[in-house]
Length: 409
Image (cartoon, rainbow, N blue to C red; front, side, top):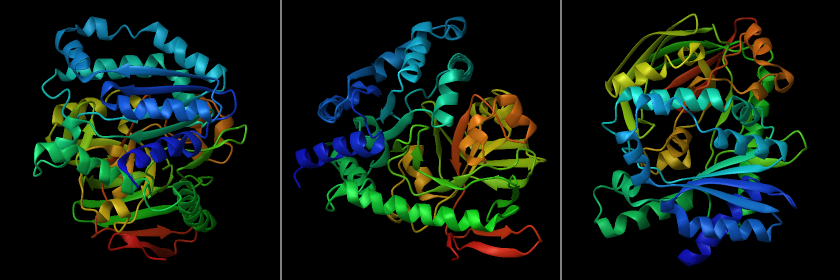
């Protein structure tokens, strides 16, 4: 396939499999000026697939950096009401949302931590209904990524500048199964395989997971009615979609107060235009009681104090070390990719869909069941080829789930 053919195939995949656009549906795309060529192709494919209206929100790296450099904390506290209204209309119209990411991992390096965290809190509070709709899969949503020059330079610093973007394109095409036959059919089979893994775990009804690896020794309790899910999701209307492309994970929720021990990251966390790395978190009765990072410590400290729920976990995800992304030995500095190369956890809100009947429950009901709620949800990677995970059954029997970073069954 030529590059143009791959680009068109990726755009079609995002529309028909990612958000699975329906006839007459409203599609909102959030992206940046770095993705214009690809986004134009997505818009065309969306209309060809029957979208009623496609709206594109464009940001720009220069604009965003300038804003954070010169704005005040007081201005950052005033989240724009028109953005809230736009997201509310998206929900009301049963629309679909597509993120096309190309972010520079170092975009906001050097910006005052207070500004970054103030923006995070303001957005999280203002967009609470929108976040609920996404976390509940009330709307179809998907996240994909395409290269930008700054991001490609971060991933491939050893390559000549004129080869970096092309190298990142090639890597991304491989992760989303473009160029290897019928991508739509390949994704159908891939999701089916993940669903089989999730089904096996759901049959087990493990009470706890025990993790051991260099720098990590933690026990994570699971709610009695937890559900293991995959990247293949479904709206209440029955529309299937793929939230993350690529995806290699099966995931569930932890019991909010049932996490004890210490974890260490194995890949950098790209968060709000900064990199956080070489960090450890210590948990007691679910809460993070000790944290230290060699890189980005102040930002990590602020992240876990964003609100009450941001000092607890909301997701437990299993990804084999021998997954395609991990085997490529490429560090993407982008959570969409790096989380699909490694077992990971998430700080903050749990997906209500990971609990039987959780979709219909309000925040207070979820909290009463020991399910974490928060305005944050940030994945971080802890997996490696040295990680063992055991599952504890209700009667105390221990069974191997992972050995040396890979499935034990």
